[in-house]
Image (cartoon, rainbow, N blue to C red):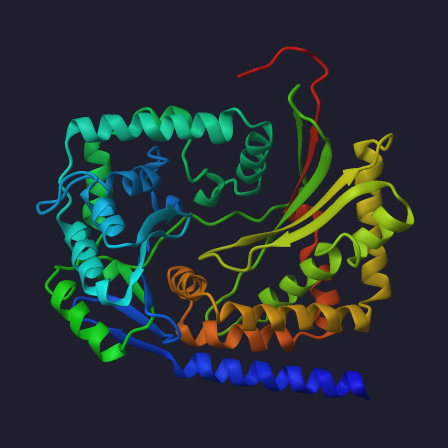
Length: 448
């Protein structure tokens, strides 16, 4: 009885927080096509200003991989009003911080500052949306920077190389198979004109989402946006994103990756799966809970309990799923075998556990624990304005709507045990997967 009362109270608290969040989100669109979201939170005099472009690694021209990330670096060079490096220096001088990041579906730029510095941030960000001024020297310098970044983060990390190869095998035709940082041989050929061509097309108000979160008034934010972003010209004829699609996968794919630098071998499988779609998030919600139940915790998940605790054939297990992508996504399973257990045995154990899970179904107590944890996560998210801003920006640049963002927590809570098992039956199909073995090389030679 007591547990039911606590659960009911928790649900009520979540409902209050969800209602408050919905009431504090305002949207508008400028005449030039700029979409804007304002999230009010007046608990501290701080604001996060984020500008998201619907242009990422999956939108690059063929043969120009890495151009989206390359341009992200170049945007911190000069404009017609600011010198190279001045943007970040001004943010810092005003007590704030700034940065940027690139994904397959978007590139985003943000600043976190005192609320009374918002208009200055908006003025500077609007300036570099259309008035970037680059030189051949700028391009050469930043090309060297991203090549060194690839060298450090990918080429010198066997785990990163393995992940890159697995993704390329999963997405044979779709550009999600191309690394965000780019293939080295294509990065080496990136030019100033490549960057400017991508910039002129994609960095435009009708290809952007402005997200402002914090101690702000929506009407004041709109006035500032009209003043600074409103005069910018849109890119004419900018249509929907047209990307190659994956052909039907008819056979399982396998990768054996060997490297003498591998410290701990493991087996991993990635499945092609659907993502959150506008107005249709049920499959993604079921897959989200499936990942939590199968491998969300080494102590309480299905794989963790059976393989780590009961059988002790694994020292680590995990399941992962990314519900947010413009096109298809992936669901993954990982087993790190215990000492003396080979990868073939580890993979067989993983498959056996999945088969048993589908046959036995979901433990109701575990499902309730997972849902409670997700509800708590939603509440905690309300206290981080940067996290909230990122949630909306990533969703809108991935094809979703503000309504979809608001509906997502309820969609996850509505998932039943039967929905989760059905998702496992439908989507954990080895014919739509890549299975990878990550292992030490049997030779001392390293192939680069």
